[in-house]
Structures are given as C-alpha cells and as structure tokens.
Image (tube, rainbow, N blue to C red):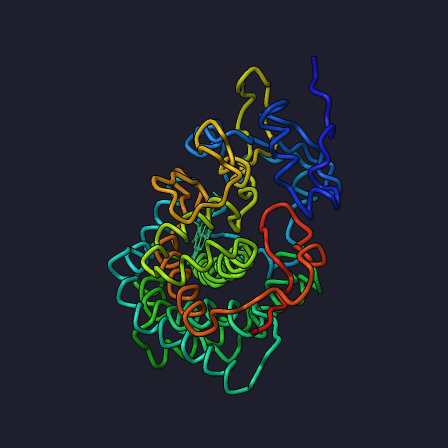
Length: 403
Ligand code: HEM
C-alpha cells in the first residue's frame, strides 16, 4: 500500500516558525516520511531519526548528481533558468565520485583544522573591528546580523578566496536570489559569473597567495578542473562559507539570550565555549534538512519503497533532537559532552568548512559576550521572522539592545 502523503505539514507557516514539534511527531509516528513539494510536486522522503539519517548519508544508492536519473519532468523543473546559473551548479555538493573526490581534494588542504588554526588571529581582529564599529557608532539597539554575524564570516571567506570584501552586498544579493528566491536568480547568476570571471582575469595577470590564484593554476595546468567547475567551486565556497555560519552566530546568540543562566555561565567561564558551540549546532543548527539526494534505483528502506528518482533528505535538525541518542534532547545544555550531533552532515559530503565554522562561531560568540555582555532581545521572540524554506534555518533579522 502506498504511504499517505502530506499528513505532516512540513512546509506550513506553523512548521516554518517552529519545526521541532512536527519533527518530534515524525520521529515517533512516521520516521521515514513521504511528502510532496508544494511547488515542484516532487516526492520528498524525510528521514527524521538520527540512526536513519546517518545511514542515509553513507548510502551510495542515494546520489547527488541528479542528471544521471532525473525524469523529463524533473529535468524541466530543476533545469537552471540560463547558462550562467548552470555554470554555478557543477560543484562537489552536486556530484558523486569520482568527480566529487577530484574536486574536493583540490581544496581540502586549505580547510584542514591545521590550516584553519592559522586564521585565528585574523578572525579575532575582524570580530574586534566589528565590535569597535558598534561601540563607536553608539548603537544601543541594532540588528545583530547586519552589524556582526553577517559581515564576520563573509569577510573571512572573501579573504580566503581572494575576493574584495567590499563587494559583500553583491554576495548577499546573489545568495538571496539564488538560494532564497528573493529577486531575479537568472540576473544574479549572470552578475556573479561575470564578477568571478573578471576576478580570474586579474589574478591570472597578478597571482596572489589566495585560493582563487591557486585554483587558477590548477585549471591552467591540465585536466583536473575545467572552467565551469572552477566557477561553481568558488560560488559554493563563497555561499557555503558564510550563509550557514551567519546563522550559527545569530541563532546561537538568540538561544543564549533565551537561556540567561547559561549565558551568564558562559560569560563567567569562557572556556565552556567549545561545548557551547557544539550544543548550539545540535540544539538549533543552521541546516534543517540536507540538500537533495536522489534515489538511483528502487530502494527498500525501513519497510518503505523509495522509487528511483525520488528525492531523499536527512532532517539534521530532527536527528539532533532524537531522544534515542541525546538525553533530554530538548534541553539546551552548554556543557553537554559527548555531543555526537550531525549538524555538519556525514559521509563523503561531510561539511568541508566544519573547522572554519567552529572557529568562527567560537571567536564570534565569545568576543561578543565579552564586549557586550548584557545584550538582550529588543523584540518579542514570537515576532522574529525565520527563512521561509526547509533547508537553511535562519533568522531574517535579530534586533538586540544593550542594557
Ligand atoms: C555552522 C556552519 C556550517 C554548517 C552547519 C554547515 C553544514 C553543512 C552540511 C550539513 C553539509 C552537507 C550537506 C549535504 O550533505 O547535503 C555541508 C557541506 C559543505 N560545506 Fe558546510 N556548513 C557550515 C559552514 C561551512 C563553511 C564555513 C564552509 C567553508 C567553506 C563550508 C563549506 C562546505 C562545503 C564545500 C560543503 C560540500 C562538501 C562536499 O560536498 O563534499 N561550510 N555543510
């Protein structure tokens, strides 16, 4: 018998405001659950238990390169709207081995914990400059995202790649258009491609010690990286490098402000930041559901038949609240240890930037608590607006005030 679909309103406004209650029901009642996308009409399978998510992320029957198995209807729906958008799509997160392995190995060295440690002083400096800016402007009430949690990771990833940080308003516009459907995606993609191409020309003429110059040398050296892959790689790193970390810092601060005793404790004992950041990632991680994987064949999973071409998603946010793995899973506890959350995914697509995200979150939150320890929410929590989508969980603004 076929599964009843859409019994659980994952895309509803109520679930978008607070998805946790719905995921708790899914874990208990329908852990491998089939929904129909409200716009695409595609079949989406949501895996909501921890153990199932971990298994899904390692299972080679669920692939990323949808081109291999899409139906004509899906191809038409998911087709990029123009060549520029297509030029940004061929990155490791959309590919399977061997292409995935080849592309990831080209940049993986730049993101090892060792390399990332070298960025510590610079991240501290950026954080201090942003906090100086808030103090010097005498801001008593401000949007934490605008003033702090957005610029910090954007500046870091822009410097790493070798793109001018002053262009961050453009990065934001492209991300909003291409990831959140706000604005014109086709135009944003064209702008991004022409922007990257002009940076590439500059770096070819005058190479520097940055990731773009390094990757251009690889492209020129032979058959390891073609131009579309290069464009897509830079775009992925730019977007993945900031969008989620913005939310780690922002949602982290919101959660701490909503748990004042724990915030006081962290201010008194800054070394707790290591477990605190892990707990923020678990309790309210930036990625609600992974990006799509596609079933490459008809597959039986926990008694369900997942058809070739169906989309499967690991609900990381749900897995991280699974009582079978985390004691008092709905309790926010900055001392929780061990904490085996899967906020960074798993398997071969495990987040490349996890060491960087952890370091940025650690520095950003601790510096903020040290400089502005009495920060409070400036509006009722119920009035905060969350992104209207099921992948990236994040606030649109976080108005805070100094007291
Ligand atoms: C708190 C911040 C972050 C979170 C929660 C996060 C989460 C994730 C998750 C869940 C995935 C896997 C998605 C899937 O399997 O469908 C992923 C992949 C990825 N992330 Fe992150 N990420 C964060 C920050 C970063 C940063 C700072 C970078 C820096 C470059 C980055 C780069 C990447 C890349 C390149 C991939 C694709 C890896 C692959 O396909 O092999 N992420 N991230």
